[in-house]
Image: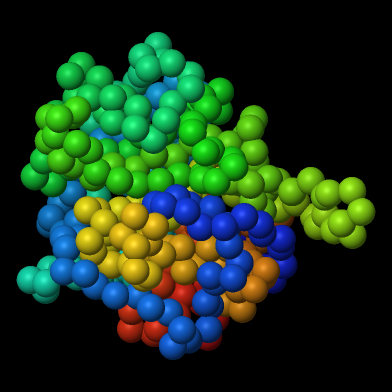
Length: 325
């Protein structure tokens, strides 16, 4: 297959907020930087030899879209030496983080269960707090409540509205309250932005709308590697949140800043960086396939994905397996 290496620039907007994933180009550090105040606060990381991931599909989902996301999850722990750079190679950078016992972040993420909440058990308008009730419904109905090595991923369909979605966040992670769910377990939420704000949460597969008189000229939209703007954008946010919930599950692990409720985490530092040269409004060097779909890592079943880099402790900069320097 013919593959070409390309460099794209792009426009990002908005700012950081508590445990949220969205864009702030001023926080990007593709080059080595002493300005980054990333510290370990003695809390746990997700270090179980095999971590059980449970997906809660909230709303109505296209089975093909679900397969694309499942394959990404499978790719995290599936070494594909012949398919370098791979998703599992990307995860190796996440695994550099360890807790005070010296245990690194898990190298095995196992999809251990799924729950389909197609009846919108808590309505089509959710809040950060009500996500915990969604998890409670799932563990009451089908999924195990795994407080030992469980991680829960709540994914909402494109017709579900979330508090601050599009205005401030594309995804977030936190931990459940035992009084609501029955135990304290880490979880992440990510929404499909295709109908609500693809220009915000599925960039660069959609373009922000220019403000009148701003002088902003929209750039060429990039073609998503799996042909779905919302799903491909969603997968990059899922990658972001998996990296951060693994390194800071209880908000006392790895982060920068003085406020644990509004931390700058290992993926926040690399927002908008997908390849070498990225940062300051540039996406970096990524690949194009023969159909001009853009990607930077490969996964199982021939899948390709475009996911952002994370902060590399050993290199003191953002890094990914598709780096060219």
